[in-house]
Image (cartoon, rainbow, N blue to C red):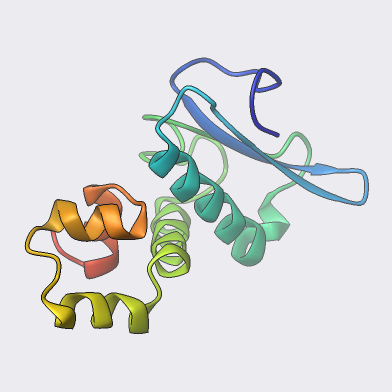
Length: 130
């Protein structure tokens, strides 16, 4: 679900929850497109890897809540894993290596723009501090 149907505050990033016949991922429309893409990939990673934890009303990733704590029932390690998988989805290893080796991208910002991600997401993918 995208757009006016998103029911959370500006601080909320996303939600993954069961629905009839499947799952729904909601994304905050006020966030930058790159962030939305990463968020969808992140929630997809939760679906693929942590589906048993997506029960009841689902998972809501709120800034400062889910990512930094265990208040929603999802551990910090699960969040890190979802971030890593999201980065792998958006920046596949072979494509990333080819882009770096091409020499066409002189800065982290240019490389991030090429993949349609934030510099922070690129840092996660490269395993370097942001």
